[in-house]
Image (cartoon, rainbow, N blue to C red; front, side, top):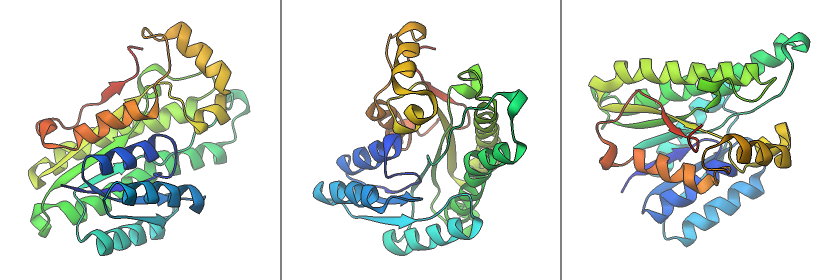
Length: 247
């Protein structure tokens, strides 16, 4: 059994990852930025499944919060085997109207926060520092490869950075016993997508452009991520895994 830390674990894909990890027999620390009630709901489900869980508030774009999150997670679990960097934001702005400050915020949350989290995970897991090795799964997006929806250039750029970061870290941390795998979900049934693009419009887009003719349920993304964290995927690192229905 493994100990999981999942960022952005209170809703959507993150919540599905937390619940499935518990079903598979793992203990979980659920990170959330805001919305304690949703995080408590996820931890209650994990405990009901017979596993240990706690919720830790931390803004992943704030370095001090990231450091504190790891301290609290290690204090609760004893050690961390798997980190899933799932927290992220999405935004829709035409490049002709883009405020670079807003784009910078996107990069801070979607890329630099993951870099900070990977650093803390590596410090804990690296065998040269007394760690046991481990797995880091970084949630990217098919937008890193396709450019995403129109007017989502900052989001696509941030996720492209996640893919490149993951490959670089996989090469650097492989000798330390740490695998780093980026996962690229496509259109998924999440509140975040609905808020940015409109749920009905996104579903229409999915039916017309995705070979499987539909959007993913968060549980389908979670299944791949939890599998990647396990021993069956022990020789997989660095290269992105698409979970996008064929698009």
